[in-house]
Image (tube, rainbow, N blue to C red; front, side, top):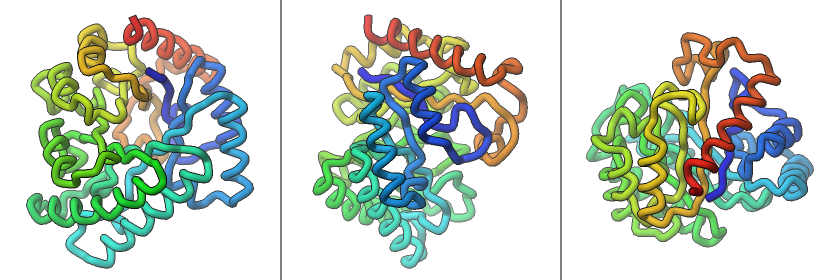
Length: 288
């Protein structure tokens, strides 16, 4: 397994100084930096090349995280919105190829965070799957894996447990469409987290990890020993990426609903140390 973190760990806005962040991620002992996929569309060719070169120099794997906006919803009843969503994701895949990123992860089957103004689940599944098949063809040509994130009921109505994700992937029928399970969301929706991992089996393409309150792994009460056992049971050797959200304020605090400081008043140096400790904790827990 390879271990890493999402780019937004240190901030309260969905933006990033990637050269600085990549070095900090490397210093923490990470193998992976998960970048904001939408950021790639705003980068020049020079900036994309620099990001690729930086990651290669540091020996970092780049995965790309997407939470499409409402006007890019591939499950929308509006055909223009669906077309916009599909075209945007195709552009992202092409940009990912330029930086050597082979995993697009997140709720690309719809939009995030959901506002629940439209909740015709059957219709949403049909339109989303039809467009996902089109996106999958492009992903196959580019050698990119689409890892669909299972979210909790407060963030989507489309895919809220592993069983639904297995069914969705079956309907799409592409080897490049897999499942992203997240311990935070599983803690809300699954009867048993290890069993959900075993159900995903070979379809598990990406794993997001964090405690039940989105603190760093090892700072809470998640049963990491049993989660690790389930991963070994299915022979998982893929990416394990932390999604810690500790800081209040800004767009991140609003979108993730962080209403109190979960860092314990940590400054940047302390945040660096906590990340390093969490990476070490995961390696010890998952690799043994």
